[in-house]
Amino acid sequence: MAERKVRVRFAPSPTGALHIGGVRTALYNYLFARQHGGDLIFRIEDTDSNRFVPGAEEYILESFKWLGIHFDEGVSFGGEHGPYRQSERREIYKKYVQILLDNDKAYIAFDTPEELDAKRAEIANFQYDASTRVGMRNSLTLSKEEVDALIAEGKQYVVRFKIEPNEDVHVNDLIRGEVIINSSILDDKVLYKSADELPTYHLANIVDDHLMEVSHVIRGEEWLPSAPLHVLLYRAFGWEDTMPAFAHLPLLLKPEGNGKLSKRDGDRLGFPVFPLEWHDPKTGEISSGYRESGYLPEAVINFLALLGWNPGNDQELMSMDELIKLFDLSHCSKSGAKFDYKKENTVRECCESIIHNENTFIENSKESSNGGRHDEESCKFRTGTLGSIQFLLCCSNGI
Figure 1 (cartoon, rainbow, N blue to C red):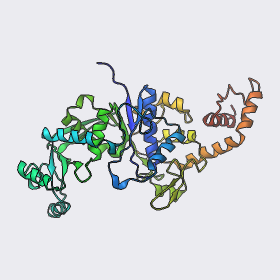
Figure 2: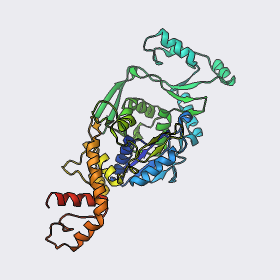
Figure 3: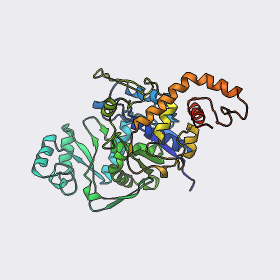
Figure 4: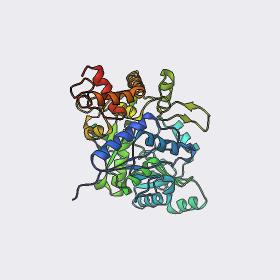
């Protein structure tokens, strides 16, 4: 069997500004794809129409353009596996929902929000699963005639995944090793809602990754609890042999280390958490961005790359080409990475100084002799921001 081509994806939701943690996830996908001669797909996950924010998609694309992270296919880039917006793939998802229903891997549930609330009040820690589904209004407890009649009447329903209890589910993670979860702790997740005729994230994610031939899913640690469900969905569809490899990245933590980095932390301590300035169309609030705050994209990329990953040596300043060459998922940390904004500010100050004096540095390096302290060769000077940083460090260290 021929070796599978590396294909990875970054799939944000257009619900607002792109968080710097999302930028790091996209960066790691980009580095991995480029290192292996693979493809990076840009997909928009917009199944939750209530959370859609106008301008968010354009903001995300502009952010990656500024950062120098390039996509090979997807929304605005084209490709052979489109459409790449989930809202444009309704009929595709319906087909696969029906496959699960026909194979007894899923069922239709008519329980109203009020009925579910009543069950939660009645049963402590209520979970819709094998032990409780028999007491609910669904196609497992109703006759086919009753189900057909309710659908004909226009009653809203959801399709739930039918999880069998007491099965150990193995998730082989490229960063964390083997993770084993017993299926009894999983609920029968909703996969599809008739109200908007759209799938939930779980179904759309699996179907899209399969049809787009994604080989590796590199995403944040917050999705690790969902990985067993996704493995079971691949099995239910008969796609286990082509299931992508999983890698769950460590969280970006507050500078103090106690919890996930948020916009409030940036507001509190005075640093951006978005790549570009964001104007919220709903509230009118303006949030600072790295670009508008004077940071250079190469510096942001370099800083982010080292949050949760190390190159296996003491090198701290790398060009994009060097990052691509050195990147290795096995060198990613399992624990969260503190967002050291003070270190980031040091890099920024160096960049600002370099921008002001760069032309002088270039001219001096050209005029110096081969044995001179500021020699272009000895300092490995390269024009461009990162090369300038390395040049400045060479000079400051007396090289």
